[in-house]
Length: 141
Image (tube, rainbow, N blue to C red; front, side, top):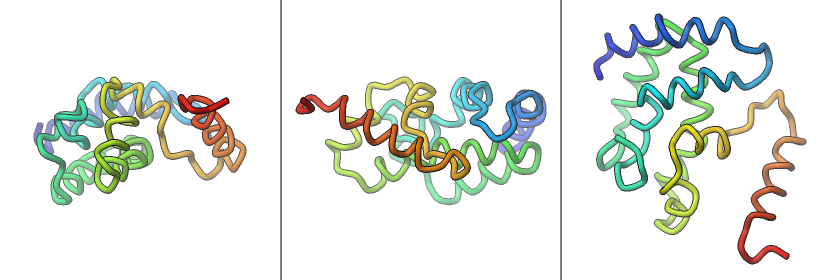
């Protein structure tokens, strides 16, 4: 998908969702649309369920974010927060960590659950996330 196609998606699909989204909260329909259109999947390698082949290049990532930002800054921000919040697991985590938190999950579902918490949602959400992850570990009491 080229820059022009990404800009068209941003203009025709993402911008209306952004305009209708809740202020100061995660716009889940927008995140879902980023996943459904395949843009979030481009951040991840194919073996982990993405469509990014062996991995996304910095140049491709910049072009994608720029194309989104030109038409819908909310979509660019959602991509950055939702997608890039989990990207370090793929880029720098061990194979075991990447498989545990990324592989086998539908990407849209992954971004809803392992997203980078937004600053204005504060430490309460971060604490809930940490507690939930601890409880879901097989070795948890």
